[in-house]
Every structure is written in C-alpha cells, then in structure tokens.
Image 1 (cartoon, rainbow, N blue to C red):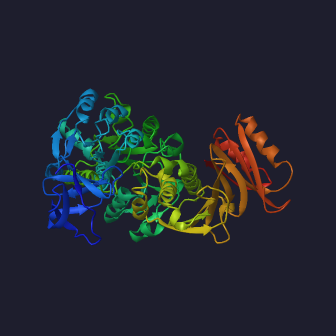
Image 2 (image 1 turned 180 degrees about the vertical axis):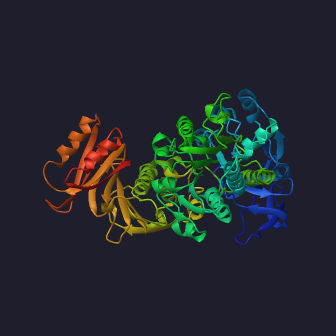
Image 3 (image 1 turned 60 degrees about the vertical axis):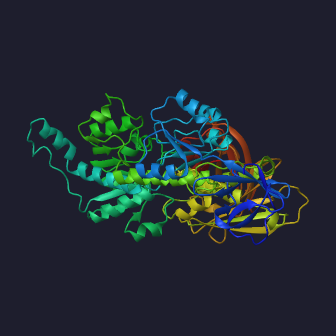
Length: 615
C-alpha cells in the first residue's frame, strides 16, 4: 500500500473507514466502513495519519487526491529508569529501547534511529544530540518538572517538541515538605543518629509543637497550596506570599496572602515552594535573614538556588535560624565537606521530593501519554517549547510577537503584591479584517510575558491558554478597526490588567485597570502609553518611570543622581497632560541602579512616584 494514491474524499466520508482498491484502478483506494481510524493531525511536523491496531499509515496530499505511505512503528529511547506502567503504555504504541547511563557519545550514536527520547534529570540533551538525530527526533519527554537538562532552543530549532510531567509529583513533594517540617520540629533525624551511636539524650532533643505556630508558605502554586492544606490540618496558622496568586484561592483554604517582609518577619516556620528564576535566585540571603523572626525554622523542597547557602550557614551559626531541613541544593549532589550539610542543626535528604512509588508510577504514565500523544500529532498541554512557525508568518509577525511579550513583562512589573492577577484584556488595533489577523501567537506571547517572570513555567503557543486557565488567569481579546495605509498587521497592542493594585498609580486608567500600550515603529517595539499618559520608549534595557510635576530642572536632578553612581542614561522621554501639570518622565538606563540611588530619586520634591522596570 505504500505510495498508493487515494481518490478525493467525499464530503460526508465516514469517520471510521478502511481502504480498498478501486474497481476501475487498482492503484486508487476508496473509503468504506471498518476499523481503520482517519484523523487529521494537528502536529506541525506530521501529515494526515491512519491508525490501525498495530500499523500506521501516513496520508499526504498528491494533486487532487491523497498519497498513503506506510510508516513503521516509532522508536522511543528511554535513557533513564521509568516506571513499568509507563513502559507498558509505550510498548503498545512503539518499539521501546531502554538504555541507561549513556555517555553523550553513546546517546548521539543512538539518537538518529529514534523518534522520541525520554529522560529524567541525569541525561543532558544538548545541541549535539539534536544535530545527531538528523531531524528524526520528534519529541523529548522529561519525566518530571524541571527541564534544565534539555536545550530548549536547540529543540525548537530542530522542530522537536519537548514535554514534561508537572502534575504527578505535586502530592509527593507536598508530603515530603510536611515530613521535613515535622522531623525538624521534633529533631527526628538527630535523635535517630544519636541512638544509633549508642546514646540516650532525651533532654538534648526536646522539640517544639506545631499547633498554634505560624507557617509562611513562600510560593502558593500547586505544591505550596497542598502544603498549606496539610499544615492547617496540623493546627498551624498558615500565611503565604505569592504576589501573583489569586487571593480568593488562598482564602478558600483559610490562608492569608501577605507581603514578603510580613511573611518572613512573623513566621515560626518558612516553607519554600518558589521556582528558581533570576528574581528568586539567592532570594534568601544575609539581607533577608536579617529580617526574619529570630529562631525561625526553614524547609526547602523547591529549588536549592533560592537560598544563599553560605548566608544560611551564617544565620544558623548566630542563631537567627534555629534549624533548616533541605531536600534540594545549589549543586547536587553537594560537596562531601559541605558545611551546610554537616551542620548539626540541619536535616537533609537527597532530593526525595518526588520519590514515592505512586509518584514515580504517575510520572511514568504522564510522560508516556504525553510522548505518545505528540508522536500521534496531538498538541500536548505540557509542551514547554513552541512548534516551528512558517518563515513567512514569522517574518511578518516577528516585531509584533516581540512587542506582545515585552508588554506582558512590563505590565506584570507594575502589579503590587497581594491581590494577584485575575483578568487580562488585550485590545488589538488593526486595519485588517479580523479573519485575516490570527492573534493566537500574540495572546500566547502576552501570557508568556505575564507568567514566565514569576514562575518556572515555559509558555508557548501550545500551552499558553492551558497554563493561563490553570492559574485562574482570564484573558479576553478585542479588535478595533482603524483605517490605515500601513502594511503592518497591527497598529497597536494595548494590555489591561483588571482588578489589581499597582505599585505605580499613574499606570491606572480611569476604570482602575493597569494599562500599557505599544506599537512597532521602524521595526522596533515601543511603549506608547502608560495609564493615561502618552510616552515614547524603546522596549529594551531598563527604564525608570517617574510621575512628577512638570517644571524645569527635574531631568537634570535625576541625571545628576544617576551620573554620580556611574549609571549611564540611554534615552529620555516626557509625556504630560498639560504644561506645568502632571508629567511622566521615562529614563532609560544601561545599568540597574542600587536601592540607595533609587531612594534619592524618590526624594526629589517634584517626583510624586517612580518605578524601576526591566524592559
């Protein structure tokens, strides 16, 4: 049947069909009812597919008909141990090669014969791997959440989808956090080691009760909220900090969302559940520990890099932190002579958050289903990189795509913590007919700009809507027609963040929404509106937005402060309502000013408020 030509499909072709030779032309096939399944693939790299219990046929266009080509069972390389339930699913669909502990050279030698690769955290999937696959590798599955070991850029450039398994580990990680919390409070690990050393030290290992104590959950995502539920059951008072978590979701389980400083200064126990991003890297440092309640106890089952480990040792030594329980470390495994690991007031486990029988089986099934779906041509909700976009579409939309993401990233920086982002309204102004303007990729990039800076989730056109829904983020779109002679697909993009508080009041519109607008000028994304103020700012580098009284000398005063700290100014723009009234001054800077410099700017009498933004 390979290479045979199909007759054009009738408009009412039955969905269940098999192919049989045409009576007039043996090379032609027509449809009649049987157990074949005919479906159009949604994959960017697969054609039409016919599925049969053991065989697969790919249909491709051929003139006015379709050409059917026999496709061998795909081959899946499992490079690290996977639960048997997941392997069983894979074997029903594909040939499975379980080869563990491969070197990079061995992996590269095998990969050109494989359609899919499944790894955990120990295998590095580098650009060399994708190059060695010679285009055959269609999907990489990461059995777990983090994808630090997979080169996403190389995967996307190779047209390879990357999927992960983010859901199955949630309960296991939360339970491990609670286990460490209780073990810490009652000195379980230390007492166990003492007894095994032949000692009986009841007085030395007197613990503390959890009932009535305050637990601060830092990061109120899936794991953080599950930890909060369990801690409430232990009689603890639970507060949480996550500036982008919906307050109503926290209230539903009896948790109060508070500021970062309030959380760390009032908590008896602090449990970390935040992603590792540039913003959270070494967030718990000397400065942070100086603000905590003396004698606080810290649990970390999230990411090792969010704690400055040297600073934690100092805080333990001086009694600021009474105890710590750690499942994750900056470098894993940590050095054998690590002062933190060897500290008598620290309980450690070797990254066991997801290590339960149930979680391992759940991860295996979840990643197997995602990989099989991708090989069938289905778009996975857990995809973490974008499918390849046709060159002609990218060429036209590229500046608008960049603008969309940058506006999202800018808007989220204007949100004050506590209320959480619930609603986003996007207004597109264009001279094109709505049917000629596909905004899905723009909406995805706005979602990416809003969510990625404050989470570990990777957003693309595949998973943007799914991720937004999971986080309670409601996104609506509106198109406004504006007659224009410009050939550009869009005139402007305007983003409204509804029902939120702003750290920069001037960004609020009359309706109370945070509003930012931008457009592409000469191929460069630019910010053109903040609140009700018109501005003209290139969306690159960093900027300081100031609302000030429109009077002489303001630019000079700010410039003098920045110059004294060797902060270089790249541009300056002023938008005002009327002469000598209120104005917005935007100052681009090459370097990020320190807190003292920003404080001096805020002390200028004519400046009523300001905010520093990374564009």
